[in-house]
View 1 (cartoon, rainbow, N blue to C red):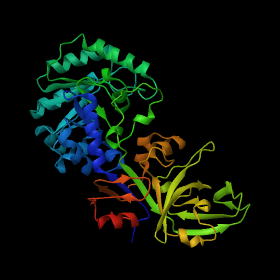
View 2 (cartoon, one colour; view 1 turned 30 degrees about the horizontal axis):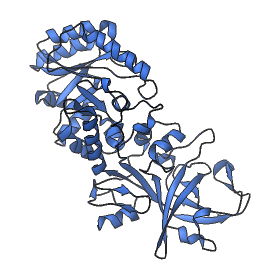
View 3 (spheres, one colour; view 1 turned 180 degrees about the vertical axis):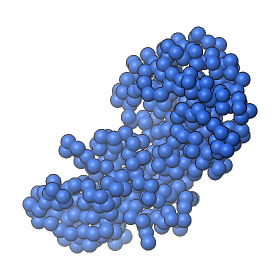
View 4 (cartoon, one colour; view 1 turned 45 degrees about the vertical axis):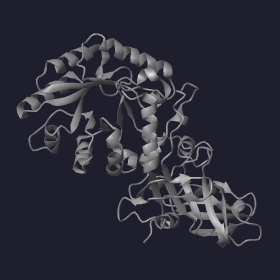
Length: 425
């Protein structure tokens, strides 16, 4: 049985993006790619191994995620971002800390004391990063109390201060507030003499693309390794070098049913779309259960459809019409059908739901914006049952897709028609 859709992740683009970030931040700045939430749903095991050689740390959210990377022999240590305090000798995390494969984040004095007691009892010396809350007001110790926590860690025999960090509240939209947060961080740092091995880190993807002063000793970034983030910046403030990211993700399916409908016919639940002319419509077997977004306030989504008529490849965009259903969408194929041709000509046509071309309406950040989502939010919503196929060298040229060196992540990840062709290449 074939899957109804396939998500392809281009590892060559990820390689290129890491090189682009390295050029952007310079040789001295360390890299900490974020691979939490299964690398935004794209497959942390495979992607983390790809990122590890260039990375000082890999950021995850939970201890479970960190242990999973170690079990899959990812060479770079993990930075666990959530607060962790209690430890026991039977924990897998204990063994990971014993082997030096995990750093933890300290969020307040209570957690620091608990963690130090556990480490003393277990004979550990744990590398920790103190998160200073400079304005996000989520995790982390308030800037006014950060000095107490820093001194506690510096005096501890069982905790090693490996980093001091903060997290910006809105580096995407508001560079002024970002700079104010940096100033609050600096005021904390100026009051303490940190070890030379302690790394200061603040920059997210949007910050590292926007301002060099945010780079510090290390940058933590998620969207950038996947090739996104630059287009999200809502003003002109960006570094000149921040222009070479390559989108790494495509999501494709196919047309499984076509029909003609007359003028005035309503389509889908609620008949929210009505044919203004005799139309040819197609059924694509993905829906909101797969993570295909719904839209509000009249925003429209489009997909790219590719088919072959005789020896000629045809390609065009098609609007998603009517309500998005649980496991199917309907697209308007009228303008893609040659005059006088049978609608069956479009049965089996390839449908690119999310693409890598910024000029096309199915570019992932464009789709996310129209759906009122963040780019990484849209990625994380793509259902885990959709096969992830990791390839090397996928390029969208504006016509047919070219894929070389295909690496299939799991035996279940059987590709659709375009990937089957690529496996022969």
